[in-house]
Image 1 (spheres, rainbow, N blue to C red):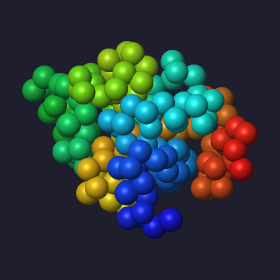
Image 2 (cartoon, one colour):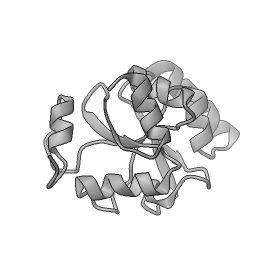
Image 3 (tube, rainbow, N blue to C red):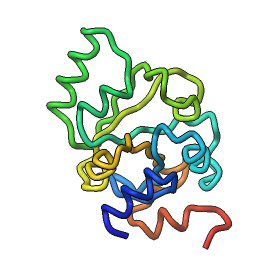
Image 4 (cartoon, rainbow, N blue to C red):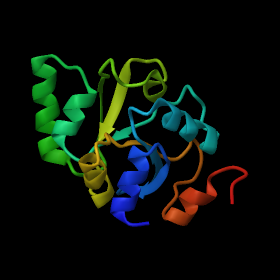
Length: 154
């Protein structure tokens, strides 16, 4: 699947395996509640385990969070210094984000991996919500491992 096909799949409500710097994840469009719920179902992920939102830019991250000016300034400093990269920043979630992303906490983790899929997903209108590995499960170093993590799936 090409990057463009993956971006279109996200917008169409499908799940997509994608790489980050540390692990392959299974992602959905962050604002598509049904697709986000499928991440939990496919991975057997506990609904109490929030999902990180992968974003292509600082501007995309700003749309997912609600911060006061001082917090937004910190988000800018951290993202300029460490993004793209494996840093996840946790902040109060925007009210439009499905509760399933935050597991009802009201907070969201945002991260900007250095991969073309996250940039392409944003050009297709997706915020790129991603789910990394299940807790206490080994990291998946390749797409095949992310695919194999789906219980009962070929």
